[in-house]
Length: 340
Image: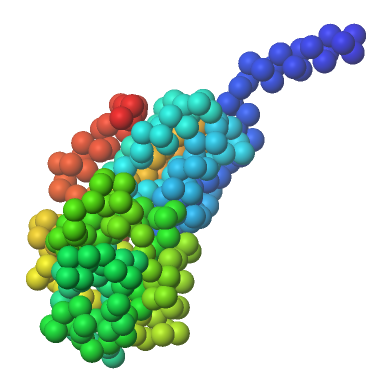
């Protein structure tokens, strides 16, 4: 009799599979520090607007860290949603699928810019990508040869820049912000610097190896970068535009390629260092963890991410209404990301 009961219990567990996640009734979210404040606002408002559901728990960890957790598998011990400040990568999709996460639903909800800011009492920066590359690269071209970076002051790089010691706080490699920074500032600046002839591997190393004496890589969120600026006011920090907007009383933002970052210049495409923002929903958990569908629909509503909505007031650059409607329809239709 005991054997029969044991066999029945085991069979029930095997048949249940991912449905074991039903024992958890709170949505678990992690990922991008850029998306973190937006998702936190939505989670709180969702909890207020839908009293039948618990407010989601939102953590950070960076885009890469969040997607790594997201791809750990299906079930109550894995997160439901990963916030991201870049699209999911091919290898991340493959990692997800290897652990049984097949229904990856991508939701774009707006845009953000990446800004360079100093303490408000520092000089005015009008940056070009080549300035940033020359400030932080381990080696730079001088008289046609690559040499150890000799620059100590921004004015040594270009006479138009402030007479200010070079110190830069950049996002760590776990952040989506780092990848956009690398692509749109460092890679572009490296190209502008006109490096001498070298093979592809050496070129990549020259463009992507940073000096250790003046560059600090921040693995935590933007509050850690802000703390660096407060400790050393000459530091130039790399932030999301939304974080800068929340702290503009203590920060001064730099122009990039002649454009001042703002909601308007990012939305219009004029500001060169910008990116779309996403979150990824684990389709296997919809209908198992309560509230995932409702949370996503609430997030994409006019009142939250539309023009004049709650998140625009918090610094989000909204998508056009038709694009937001497309994102909502794709989610409701169960559309999943294709292999890249």
